[in-house]
Length: 242
Image (cartoon, rainbow, N blue to C red; front, side, top):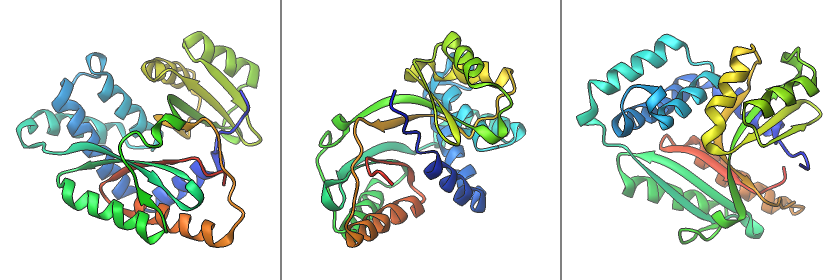
């Protein structure tokens, strides 16, 4: 594949997350609660929960915190009222943006998302207006500095475990999988003590768009910052080539 792991962006986000780890753990805790409500507390029989646990581990959430979250959710299923909602829209110069949220108040979240788009000179569109420009994939990012394994060995291990693609970037390795294969591939790397920066199901743009206008860049960054600071927003995907 033509490499485009966006590792620098992921690293930047991780640094931001480290500064606000409590918020990240709260977000993942919500995801655990919803996953347990939908499929039960056993990750071996609940793929969504297994995926959330992979995300939690990639964000360095302690195992005992994960286990407590699962037990709490299992005993509190009736009170879990969060629901997933996705918004799609356009930033400056037609940049495609997808926003995944997990909320207990859809009206509040919709208003906040719309405001973030408007303040950045963009607009929220109809469902499906930009998602066709993205592919849903499992994505694992490995920091080269932290990984002792040779690229070829890592690639073969990932492919043997079920990965579909592997790319070597300047500062990272990127492993792509079918969404359903993310957990077994992640588990194989974990068992081999491969340190992972991130491991999650994501939306990868089919093409990236470069912005050269400084005002457009500033407006787009304003929208992205507002979205990422919103407690209801779980993930933001876009096709801006930063």
